[in-house]
Length: 358
Image 1 (tube, rainbow, N blue to C red):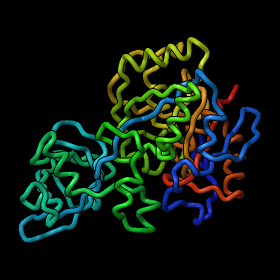
Image 2 (image 1 turned 60 degrees about the horizontal axis):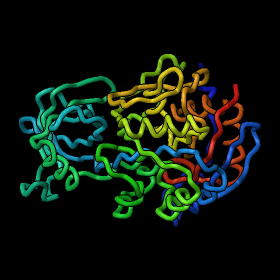
Image 3 (image 1 turned 180 degrees about the vertical axis):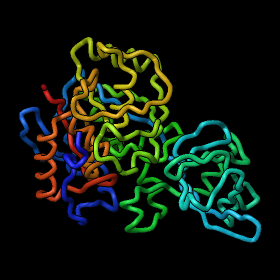
Image 4 (image 1 turned 180 degrees about the horizontal axis):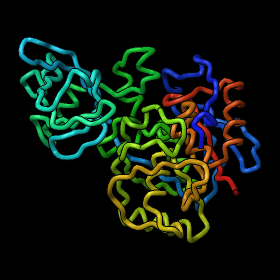
């Protein structure tokens, strides 16, 4: 499909720079199968679901994945910014680097100077591979938990470009850009639909017998990369690592068997479930990398509803929601959201989508 079919105009003032307070006071646009809308709040979610439904959350935890440092080669010093996006070993990460032209294989980069990293004040990495589009494989001098600790000290929260370009990261982002149920380190972008949940809202959902299950997909920085192709068939997704354990798979299967609906909290949960589901929609324990790219025409196997934020024009995420609820339905919903003052993107408002009947 032509990528320009997924374009739309968004006024700059609709981009949220801070989350709603409290989180569940964010607005929620409920989009029904008949293309009608309800303007609600996220805290109204229990009234929009029913007992026996199962919410599937992504419990990945965002790490401070944005690093700044220097590369020294002979007497030449270059400033480098790297955004980690996929861990491939205890001591190595794939990263997007700017400016990529200043690095070559074998270079050493010193990150975090002056931040008291691991008592030495620096975090060193060697360039092991150079790929396309500014992607590099970095091998760090620390490994495993020691590297995790070093990143906590040296790194910055990887705010999306449309926020980072408008204001600096601050201490609030360490908590704001993290779900209340995050527990498995590895994401370099938040599963933003989950940012709307509070302990109070989770308790109400539980009281209403709306089940909660957790899977893990470590969201990568590739989620923010623009689609440069003119046709969706020519776009390549970056892979992300995920896992569904056997108990969770069994619980979701049981919910479906008794007539409960599967509601994915975020496109990351949906992409993981759709990657793991069999043709008949059943789940088994699953782990690995997925680069699934969902566009209109995709036949969904398991997801019945989707809670998600409002996405960038021409993005793979807007393509996904258009596949889920129909392109015309999403165009109409987004026009309504823009006209009604909804806040967009990672810190913005949410919508609850029903899967298209077609």
